Length: 288
Image 1 (cartoon, rainbow, N blue to C red):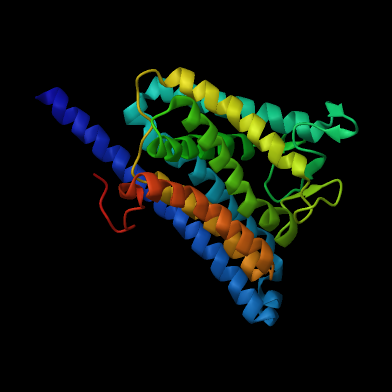
Image 2: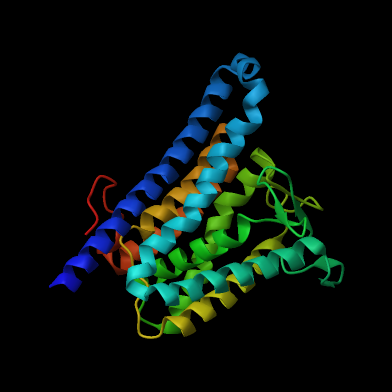
């Protein structure tokens, strides 16, 4: 009895931490979008924010990136087991960091194309960098969105290999909304050549697919008989896409926003076609 009560108390604490992290995640998005909307409608207010503009951009962005990494830990720790989840975190971050460091250092090229993503570099807006190349925030985002994407994919199919492929595609579809906002609307990174999709070369999506698939294969091997499932996964995925879509709209990148919206809708259309119960629950709903 005492053990069961202790377990419930621990889960209640995890649920509370999740709620705090989730609403900080949502709040950072709202703050950023509201600030950009204010500057768009009233450009003169820039003179008021000028001295602290950098902090007004970095603080919500860094909060968003931090909560993005924390949320899946709180979402999947109980179901997967905390040590198993730790292995997921290490694997996702390690493979993501390796791909990014190889890509930004340009040490691997084929026919003049830097692998795995194409030539690019990160600006200073995401803070300190690993080896001076990759912001520390980036590897945890690979872990976070890859496990959420795999969660969505496993709702749509019971086939192991189909789920891995589908989850990888869902991850790439996130970048369709992400990239125009983060390298054109606001320069968090930049490409060495003017690619076909708002500066991004097609090799970037090929690299995303390859790196994500390696991460997914590791997850599948490590999960054993445990299920990767959390009711908030659709919301985390959707919000992480809606944020860059909002940025693109506010920066008048209407075509990019439209294409990104279609890409964002695809995972949910797949889910609703295969399992209508996978629709995101209302944000005000209590966690079960």
